[in-house]
Amino acid sequence: MSTETVTISRLGSGGDGIASGPDGPVYVPFALPGETVAIARVKSQGTVISTSVASPDRIAPACPHFGPDGRNGTCGGCSLQHASDALYHAFKRGLVVDALKSKGLAAEVAPLVIARPGERRRVAFTARQTEKGLLLGFNQAGSHHIVDIDQCPISRPGIVARLDAIRAVATALSTDSQGFRLTVLETLSGLDLAFEGVRKVGDRQRRAVTECVLALRGIARVSHDGEILIEPQKPQLDFGGVLVSPPPGGFTQATKEAEDAMAALVLGHIGKAKRVADLFAGSGTFALRIARSARVHAVEGDEKALKALDHAARHAQGLKQVTVEKRDLFRRPLMVSELKVFDALVFDPPRAGAEDQCRELARSGVKKIAAVSCNPVTLARDLAILTAGGYRITGVTPIDQFLWSSHVEAVATLEK
Ligand SMILES: C[S@@+](CC[C@H](N)C(=O)[O-])C[C@H]1O[C@@H](n2cnc3c(N)ncnc32)[C@H](O)[C@@H]1O
View 1 (tube, rainbow, N blue to C red):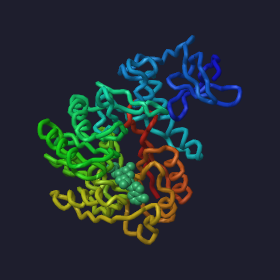
View 2: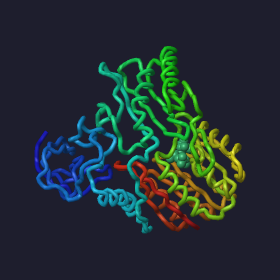
View 3: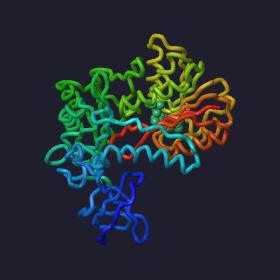
View 4: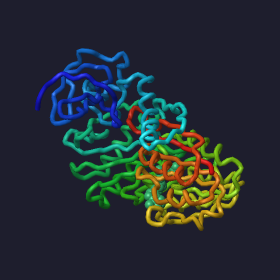
């Protein structure tokens, strides 16, 4: 380890400050552009020891668990609470601008749709039983250490208010000191707790969880590795007026606000299209909204998510025809011949993007495409494929769904 003084020139894509070192960039978490900091350095990783010049964009973090000076150390859930809104919003929009630029795409990028505290309805925690009780929080960056949290300004108040109830259920389920994951989703009918990787879940733990949940209020369902342990209420989400019961641990947009913003952009773009394909459809976030005005074919790899979509579509009033298809779109993208029947299409893949699907789309005659993405780098690659195939980008909107993190979503609209 060496100590040295460096000046931060910019934020990297992970939100760390970056300084030039003698042998390449040095990444300094919690440092901002313009700051001069003394750091302890191991290879390209610096840890701030002291700050001699602070940025005017440095602000007090919203949460005591945040940052190197946090009450219990760095929580690991947020990486950018110390930056002003102006700097933070410019950073997030810049991730999309830079990704497009790197592929030579000249599209105009709209202002960031901002996220606010208290919006996160889906939160992935880690937890571990200790002699002093259960630790529930996030993994510190680059470590297995869990900072036990008693507040979380990014999360919905309904989740924060029930942290003790969540702890009680986790304590009833876990048998040893091995860490495990827990995704909490706030639904219309209560919290949906999806545990993963708890060891040795036997009859005693199942009974303990049941007793615990029945004594508590506000827990709709508890599952472990996809198996439902107790479900006092079916968890329900509202996708544009259609009620959907998502499968345990299934994908759900992390905030309703971002979901609504993305859906508005998608619906606004596809307009009066009559026949629409929704690829990587999940439980129907877009498909069910689109089905108010168009026939929809929803394609998705996860059978349980697709069943939830299909069930919701069949029980909802006033929808046009919705058909579903379970398909691995990485191995078997929809081919040009299959795309012929659609006049509009939305795709919303995982972080890896939809490269092979875009190669087929590029050769297709689908008039309007909405590309929804959680990774600007793969989005830019996919957009480059589509523009090379004759599509014109009509808009790109970055959307903040993961407040104070370095993740950003985007919706790009294209026409041919
Ligand atoms: C980012 S989520 C979007 C889901 C949905 N559009 C939504 O907004 O809730 C990506 C979806 O792609 C699905 N998926 C992942 N890999 C896939 C594959 N190879 N083929 C088809 N679907 C896949 C996941 O199950 C997940 O539902």
